[in-house]
Image 1 (cartoon, protein in one colour):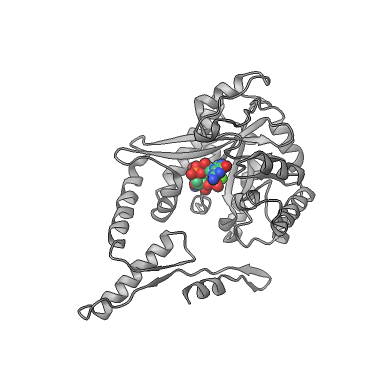
Image 2: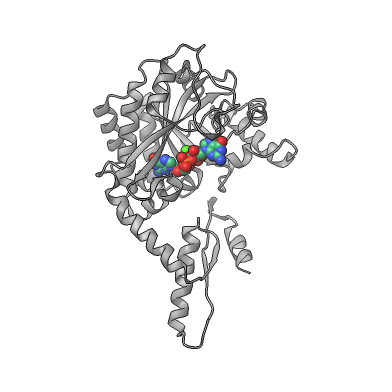
Length: 360
Ligand code: C2E
Ligand code: CA
């Protein structure tokens, strides 16, 4: 029943021509022994609901006494995140974004990592959402942008230098001074706005207010490109694309990783690519893990690809080494899946040119 409620309520509503999506998270608890009071059970259901939200929202969870410990741990992480920047515990890795036509890496996406003193290296999937909840994402986001721009400046300058994509959360974009803060960072670091793209998820964009749209427009006026991340996972209708100031669209890995026999998914992807092309929006296929997926996305007309097939996220020094080599040399790929993978030449040419030409 919970599954049905979640599914039914997630269906988009059309109100005054605006698509509205509501999701619910359900917590379920039942009396375990007679000693439990009604308020105990309600508290347990509340905790279970919190867990359902923590597990990505729009779902349900059934109370379990072990949840107390998990929630305590989340509170602990939340408190520590507030100091992570000041304590110098964050670092940025960079995953190459490759031209599907030439196999050349023309840009990178910055991905933050948390080097926790006792838990070790924590990936963003385990802390970004908590940081968004308690506001720690604001100092973290500012730090990531400045650090990534500083490092990217070191990889080279001019038209051949790689473009840089940085993820931003809805909460950051909603800050009234977000545009000024980006502009200040670019000036302080001495990084060209045209080399910077900011990625905002489709789900966040769905909740965009007119003020958010104005923010995106102002960023574009600075020369920064706007990327819709994880496209296809929300309920963003294709016809809405026209109304948003968007330069690049990243097709979610769910669509990239399906086999060619899944005709419906291929048809949807093909429609996304075709419409993007007609709107002069550049497409990037996310999560490419093998040659077949790369070829499928290339054949569909997608411009760029990103994924473990090409490279895992690299430390800045490796991007630098790779980008200063001539095009005939190759990057040494790191990580588990690197063996047996086709090495890609990394010589970021025409990056700016190709993205610019299509978004002009
Ligand atoms: P995302 O923006 O969708 O980033 C891509 C994620 O997919 C990265 O995970 C990347 O390592 C992973 N990935 C890349 N290629 C493949 C592949 O071939 N197969 C699979 N299975 N995965 C692949 P990561 O680094 O753990 O980041 C997770 C998410 O955290 C990102 O998802 C992004 O939404 C968020 N994030 C990362 N850095 C930041 C940041 O600085 N600020 C904000 N607001 N969010 C960030
Ligand atoms: Ca991203």
